[in-house]
Image (cartoon, rainbow, N blue to C red):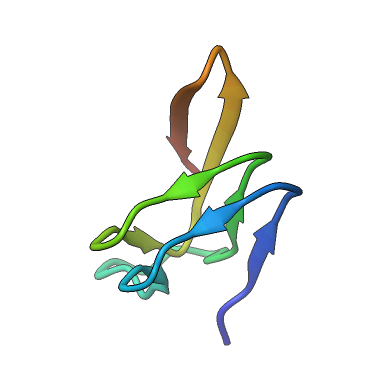
Amino acid sequence: MRKVLLDKGYRIEKGVVVGYKPGRTIADTTLQIGKNAHIRSGTVIYGGFTYLVDILGLLLFAVLD
């Protein structure tokens, strides 16, 4: 089962793959997308990541391991 947590103000364009199953085994595949995220068409976001946004308009991300 995929778990996706979305914060306020997110925009996800058509053609985005959200929560794609990683090739390696990880304990928690929860995907977190932060406030005001704008995910553009063609983007693939793997489960187990946290995407933080709204810091000077820059997209920052970190892998949860």
